[in-house]
Image 1 (cartoon, rainbow, N blue to C red):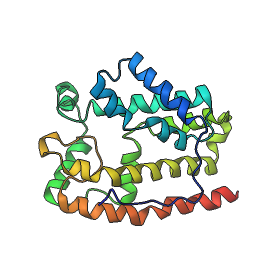
Image 2 (image 1 turned 180 degrees about the vertical axis):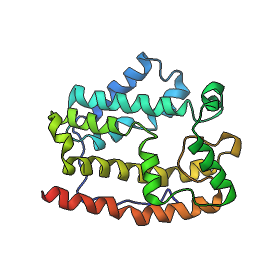
Image 3 (image 1 turned 30 degrees about the vertical axis):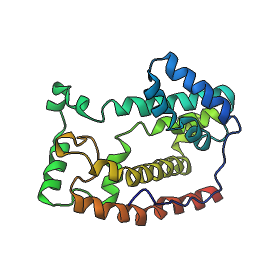
Image 4 (image 1 turned 180 degrees about the horizontal axis):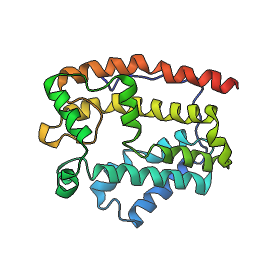
Length: 224
């Protein structure tokens, strides 16, 4: 648990036909921007296959649009990992200004109290990552220019929120083993995932049970 978990989605996966070209151009881009340097670093980055992830995530993207999506994801993943260890402890001024909510969360986890319901967890989790960026990239890649009035539509809001929730749930299930291996002093202060082993053991099945809920919201919205 949880690397052998599979999530089902209510549609067949599609992939951009420009994957191979995007893969080559992305490697050139990360080298040019010096986001990845050295042979070992390039081999490590190549194993991620960000272009494949982007080609599945943005199947309508072609050429420059797929390159943009791939580069944006590459930067996000590489940048995020710079704060995935001791470096995230450096900005002491930022740490001193952390919200009282984060302190309460830590206290709840240490004492064994459940800090949130699933809905509270999702509300907090949605604000941790730049979740709106992939949605905007997908609209751009598909050549969709949404009028401002569309964002007042319940259907669009539900669709976007559903896409975010599914992504967060999948990410957190697959991240559980990685987070569980961290020593307590390197725990990510921004994560919404419990730290205690028994809480982690409960969260995986809980997320799996909750996963069909946002997926099921997709069907009536699609019908409209």
